[in-house]
Length: 318
Image (cartoon, rainbow, N blue to C red; front, side, top):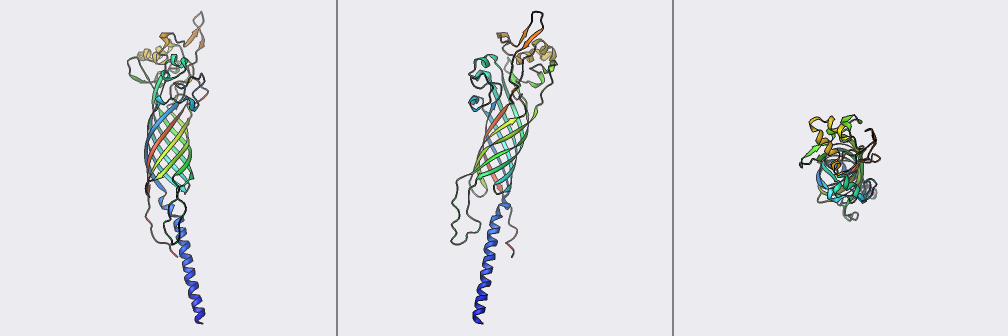
């Protein structure tokens, strides 16, 4: 009888320890749910691929070889991240950036002779999905005797993609050095009946790769590179063909001379815009940009994120 009581007592203790052990494991595996939210901010650099500036190629600026680092500008960003799973997050981001491009920086002689330039502020709001293909392992919340844990990795690495909405306002430099908004002037004849003005609100598809390094349980440093494919070819105000200068002047009233100059700064230097027949009718509108491909811009950012921890409400219940 005493022997049976001893065995029973042992079994009760064994079952209790087993339940306790697996309860700890379950609590530890669910610990990420108390740390699902992060807020952060960052700064970085931008670059632009479009119709202005770029490489020596006669083709459009649509590859890494067309990057012009002298056109790099800045970006500031704020983020909110929510963990859907330990290796998946949903992120909301707000960004303010500057983009720029200048034919004077191109190695293509044709673009240099065209002589167009722009700069544009960008306000972007985006919703992004992140997938972590690399995760830094940390020691467990409960340090059981004899448990050495997994080998600690150095970084968190993730891929991301999403959708965004952005506002842009391209500006051109006048002869007096002042910068003016280009969309209201219709530099490709939009104010003179050649189509309608483009919208300054457009969509984008952010995608890229990022890495994070934990400083402590709540702070992390991050480095991210992302490309924005957009739904517009007018971030630089250039897409299609030139239009008659006299009609652009007439359509813009007291800003007529300004609009005509910003449409073709080198017209007085012999740069062709419109070819006329002998009777004065238009024979051909010369190419100003390339409408076959939309503009693209890029962000490279360095960020700091803070993990919002929820307090544990109670110990595991059995």
